Length: 69
Length: 362
Image (cartoon, each protein chain N blue to C red):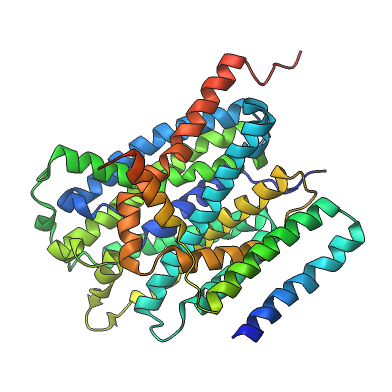
């Protein structure tokens, strides 16, 4: 499973990086790399079985905090 | 240089918006609390959504050819504009992941019980990613074909179920309290109809800017179709409608014409999938476009695949099970989406009117 994950994310880099490097648009490269890293870290943690905090729980907490129903 | 060179016409906008609204509402509409009055709460919810639509359309007409991200900077200034834009991008991304989870939960529960959820998500995300990379025009053209197909199926299914339906299941009329009626209307307003707020990012790419008003027509037509489906489900299933997780699917299971035309539900799930594709593609597209505009990039194309990975990962961590999903959609979602659907658009409109922006060209 992990190998497939690495392959998928390397494929993403292989598809996008050459064009990005050639055009020398560093800001676009930076945004791409940040999103890529975020996706990679989230998927990696999920696949090794770490339970990530759900954003829905946060939203429910905030709503309950402001509107005590 | 423009990020999106494609243009869509007014009629394409109607089909796109209808497909977007059908996206999840053809599977489940959170009006089960309204019992027999579900179909009427859908209509009154659509009326509430028309108010939301009037506000964000007015905003889009005021800032012609600009998307939400661009005019947030003009209204709130650089810093607050960026913060509000980021919140909106989060909302679109999260909505895409919620829908992704929801449709694949449905497929896993009903059709592919042995397949892991993540595999289904990856396939749907890849299809959506290819649509997003091809741009808005492609999504709009797909939606025209798929939405016509869906409307045809809605009508055909309803006709085929006439034999099984019992109109007395829709009685008593107004057998619920006003509070339940209004709550249920609000749920219907926010879940399928109010989400059309994403079109605030799409209006900029219309051929003629006055055609943004056609979103109202799309909401009304979609509301009639969704209301028809809700009434049909109640008429066919009776009290079972409020218990089963997927009422439309259960109702379609009852189709039986002369012992020949039966077990039609699997053909109809194609329509569920195609509508979910339209909805997720559009949300995915607005997220990619929004991030590209926020950081003033030349193209959103490189962002598409990493965003897909984030949507899948978010979809996996959002909920542990379907019951949590339905509980969240019914009780927390109608409050969570309010700032995005009406709060910020109304605030923006008021500030824009007071400050008199954009300045009239001399």
